Image 1 (cartoon, rainbow, N blue to C red):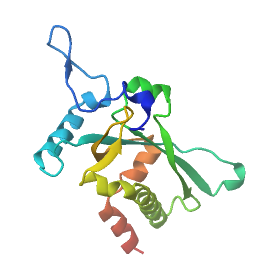
Image 2 (image 1 turned 30 degrees about the horizontal axis):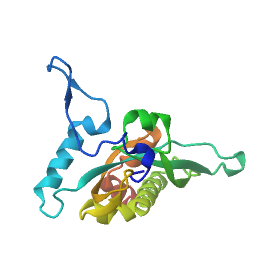
Image 3 (image 1 turned 90 degrees about the horizontal axis):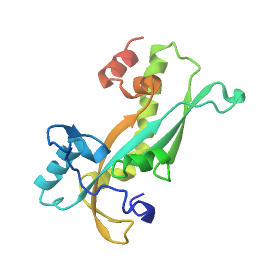
Image 4 (image 1 turned 90 degrees about the vertical axis):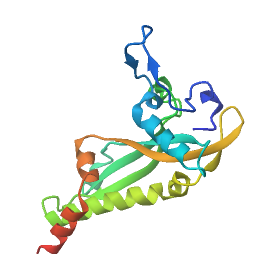
Length: 186
């Protein structure tokens, strides 16, 4: 997405703050206009090894889908990714600003069993960790990336929001101590 020439003029290379014409009201238009992106860029500038790197927030999206009646023992969650640097109107038009990076299959046979629910939580997190593992080095040490204008620059990746409905939020929000407690009680 960073290297896509179609986005070279529709990408925010740094966080920004925008105000109304009278200067009184802050305007939030794109992801990089948010305080969180600004704060992450501040953190990057505090480290001499990452100073000058562009912050690339990773946005994850999933939504359970029905695949087939024949697979009724599993639920499927396509996992999509986008980056917060691409301006909102491009993401909404999907012009290749959202890509599928995984297709998570989750068993559902024993949904009422607390140990099984703990297993599903762990499985979901393990799958996400495995998929996102390739980003880990670039979250602390700058990596060279090519941009849509043909130039190269240093980037630091960061996990941004995970957009999901309630069911996926439940899978994402479990507490490790709760899972341990469920697994220890018999």
